[in-house]
Amino acid sequence: MSNCTVITVPALEDNYMFLIIDNDSKQAAAVDPVDVDAIQKAAADNQATITTILTTHNHWDHSGGNLKLMKAVSTIDRVYGGIGDDVPGCTHEVGDGDSFIVGMNTQVKVLFTPCHTRGHVCYYIDNAHVFTGDTMFVSGAGNFNTGTPGQMMEAFDKILGLPDDTKVWVGHEYTAKNCAFACFCEPNNKEMQKRLEWAKQQGSIHAGQKGTVPSTIGAEKACNPFARIDQLDVMEFCGPCDDRTDRMRLVRKGKDDWGRMA
Image (cartoon, rainbow, N blue to C red; front, top):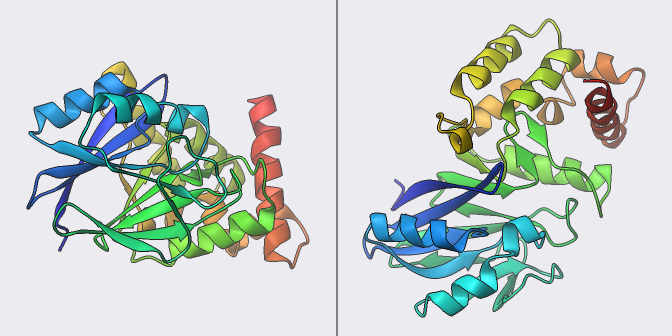
């Protein structure tokens, strides 16, 4: 059973920040708090004290608020980031399998998922929630940037190894566009078509609508092309290809090519 409450806080045009509140102590971790005022308001509205920053990766729209928040909130004494990712203000660089506690009882385990950046990490909380930054999106994946298709494949395998009911909290609201590509990739997949309509109805929390987080691991297995590289329809989309890493590359290329045409 989870010991925490997750609060979704929109930022910028389409970013997601999160406040993870330990229910027993009301101490909280801020995930990728780029908008310092908004994350502080969320903490105040929920009677929580921010003690920890969890940074998924070093891109400015995720880590750019770290130093300002540390200066504004004196109770913050720990800033986590991935090994080698040069996260601003980082006090604790973490790698795969590292674990620690927020507050009294909220358990955090680190998944090292380099590709989007060289030290990208995801945070697995209380065996119930995973914060995936710009590695996994709802029905999508982040750009490979500094990494390789093999690294993204390994990152997805790691995340998809979590229980199907794990809630997936992603770094951006890209869901409607991702679902449109998913339907292009698998045009006969009825679940993907339903999810596209659902994403359109949910809209964006940034525009005052409901938004699409969280997802679940089970839903991503069913409707995320990057999670389905071993499924027949995606294999057919990729063309003759026996190598899983190359199929990950081809799905990424397909998404990029489709994006230029869409």
